[in-house]
Length: 123
Image (cartoon, rainbow, N blue to C red; front, side):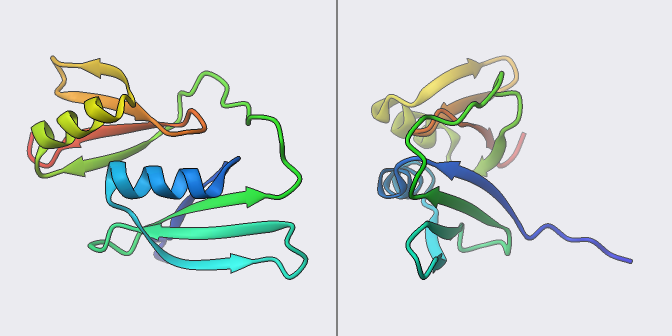
């Protein structure tokens, strides 16, 4: 028996705002989309263009209040080949929420407050 990752999912309040953020901050692009016939939800899968793993954004029409992210102890992590360039972009975007220079990592937060860890390709 062999298990492989397919995708991770988060729920978002403002789909277009989240799509723009993930496109600008992480260069993730839409791979596919599923819209409920009654308009009650939209699911968008994002990809990095290099791996098969996908990131799912789920938007629920009737949801108005922010999601409870708890202590934000869970997160995604992405490697980047130009760590300094990514840091400069994220600094310009104002989305860096935590940095550990000794470990050579930092975190950004998306429009809903989810944390994403950024690590260099080679450590």
